[in-house]
Length: 412
Image (cartoon, rainbow, N blue to C red; front, side):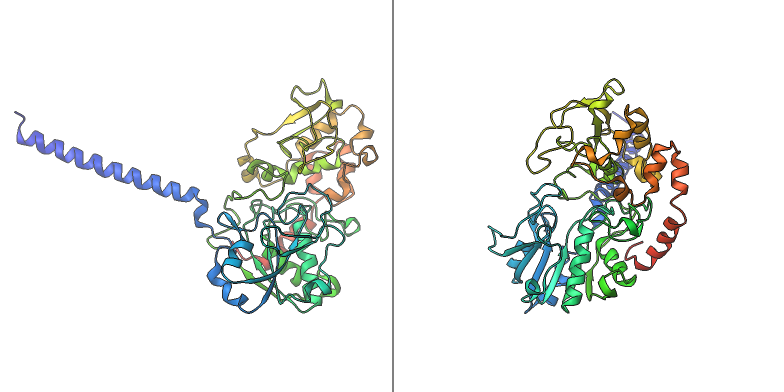
């Protein structure tokens, strides 16, 4: 029989072990909570903040497949709550997000709700006076990815201009920016304004949609310096440094968290004679061309994929190049810069330098000047300039933008 002191010591030991396990369990639960996006609530999810502002009003909605409350579209959720939605306006890729990049989208009737869908990526990009006649307030709720050449912020600008011209209010249900933790790239040259860049902002602008809307108003960037009346429902429990995994793919070719983080850099390859993963299930995470055979071991073959890329560059040809699918995207969060080394490396390896940026070779290519936003970028790559030298040329415009941006921030 064991002594009483021995039994007591065992009980005491068991008590401390139990407390230690409780502490460990508590830490684990806290860590689990942290991984659930730190309690972030999008503007759309906070219905108590805006439903009363929609009562008795005819509502237009600029939305797509990313416009969700939980697992349901914001359109379905608001209809169920008695909101009178009279019209839906769809951006690039359409309301349901099924159209390929750059493909014009026609007006339609939404099969599920019977609501008319007006395309803002077809015959026109700006709502007309007639289309706004039966709308009292416009809701803008689209997930952006924080990059100048991603066209949803262009749609925002055109909607704000149209609503300002027709004395309509715009309500913005804000969403986090998955690339909002940094600002980088050259500021757009006004001579290079295009459908993939309208305003003098860098490639990675570090703003949510609502913050950018405030900038459009504040800098007098709307047509004729109009001011649009905007009501913002901000994201709750959010700051720009927070990692954010999107619940819905923002567009057909941004189909993984890695592609969204690599996109600001790898979309620059759209201005080269290299395939950047279009025509595969891994767009923006692999890059290559047939001409690089013998230079790189990794290879893949782009195919026609309906809804993603029907006629990708180098279709049905074996491409050789870089596989970035396993690249540690924490490097981007740490360094907070675009990765120019990949473009520099592939240009150096390309056998016929005159073909690398030659848009005459394929209608699947875009202008590298328009993507970068400045004429000097292409010349610097061709001249063999270092990443440090290229970055230096972005100043002082980049620093001036960062200072200006501070005026419009809703989040730390």
